[in-house]
Structure formats: structure tokens, C-alpha cells
Image (cartoon, rainbow, N blue to C red):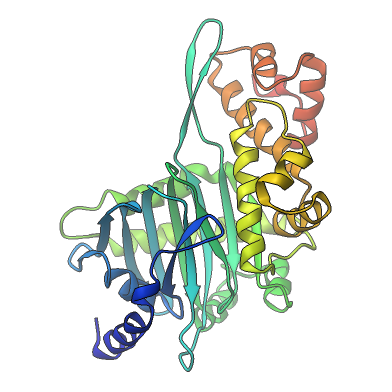
Length: 357
């Protein structure tokens, strides 16, 4: 860590140390300096165990158990991956130091590692969580990462500077009209649930290559760079076939935390009935009208549509295993009639469940 970075972090830590893990809106808040990847690593390293040789920082305390991995691939391009279990409700808060340039955009993949054990008539099936999402964030924007007690998560983030992006638009990686329009708009971030599912092998291969490195760190940076560029290219191509909703996530932090509670209840209810709007609003501590409006702004759809999309993601995962029938899956998801389930499946995936069998 260079002396300039060290001085910035020491000064910041002196000001915020007594506020670390402040309890607010049902979450313990953990701030970190977000102006650049180097400052992110340095601020986390200041209150965790840091192994600079392996480029890993780790913690096991009353709030969190896990580790973070980082790598500077080339000038303007970094990767930071966190793999942890929350022991309390946690909220990571981005802090931007004044007077220091913030010119790194980010693309983050969130993976919920939880396993649901579902009992069918002839099999007890461990269903991996289908809670995966992407978020594209402009440099200097405020985003909120909220995690609930017991939740096991991976956050894989690619940080790229404005200069790096400009060079690689010309190179074709980010040559995409939708991306260009986003970066020229007033929108600060885009949330994409269950996006790029057809490229799961690509991003899991990259994630695992970082987590499984040896005691000397990552030995093949060229391979890491190649896989990172492959993923960025796949993201841009997939986005070119999509349409970004007109929603934004420019909500106050308190409202984002409230929505996180409603979204968490939705995910907990996937194998039950959809929670009523009244129940979701009560969980979030807001009115039904505000819940509907804010949820759509945050997630780009209504709470029920979000619930249905999550259900059908689980359905597709279970159908592909060929261990259970469509009828059994439909019943487990609360559909009494297979026809209604098939219609819901087609509404989300664009084809009937039989096409997957």
C-alpha cells in the first residue's frame, strides 16, 4: 500500500472508527472508502486480517465471517470478490472522500449461496438459490448492499475506469448503444435480476478461479484477464438484446433498506403464496402505495412480477434436473393447476416447461 493511500485511510478511519457498525433501520452499517478499488481494498484491510501476498482480506467476528479477494488486472481494470456469511443484518455503505477523484465504474454480480431443501413425493431435493443479479453502477454513485443474518453471499465486482472504458469501446468490448445511452444519461445505476443466465458457466469459472487460488495468489494473470474480458463482452452482447427499464435506483438509503426487507420476505416466500402487499408494506414500514412505487423504481417491476420471476427461475432449475415432474413442481410452488403454472412459466421464460424436458 503506497503512503498516500495509507494516509487517506488512516485519516478516514480516525473519523469513522467510533461509527463502525452503527445500527440503523434494522441493519448494522459498515462504511468503506469507494473512490477507487485501491482505496476500497485499503479501507477494508484496515479492520480485517490482510494477506498482501495472496491479495486476500478476511474477518470472523460477531458481524461477519468471510474473505475478500482482489486483483489489479491492468491499469484501469480491477476485480474484487467477497465471499461471506452475515452473522447480523448488515449494510455496506459507500463513502467518497472529498477532493479525491472517483472515476471507476463497476459491474457487480451477486450470488446468493443458500440451499433450499425441498421435499417431493419421491425425492428430497437440494435446490440452489436462484437469487442472482447484476448491477451496473456509474462512478461516484451511491448504492446499498444489505444482507440478512445467516445469508451466504458472493459479490463479484469488476471495476473499470473511465479511461479504460473509452479505450475498450474502441476495441469493441463495450461497443453497445444501450451502454452508451446509459453512461450518457442521468441514471446512476441499473439493476438486472437473473441476467446473463445463459453464461453461468462463464462467470462461475471466473469466480472459482479467484476463490481457488493458491498461497502465492493468482499465477496466470493473462488467463484472468481473458476471462474477465470474455465476461464483459458477454454482458454487453446480452444487454444489446435487452431493454433497460426506465426505472432508476436513485432512492434515499433509508428507502432502499426498507425495500430490501420487502424483497427478502418475497424471496423467503417463493415456495409459499405471494405475501400480500399489506404484509410487504408492513415488513418495510411504509404504505402500500409507496411500496409499489418504490419497488418498481428499484427493481423495474411490481412485487408480484418479481415474485413470479423468482418462482419460475426455481422452476426452470428443477425441471432441468429431470428428477421431479412439472406437476410436482407446480404444486410445490402453489399452483393447483398445471395449466396455470405453464402459462406463468411461459410468461417469464417465453416458452412452455415441456420445451425444457
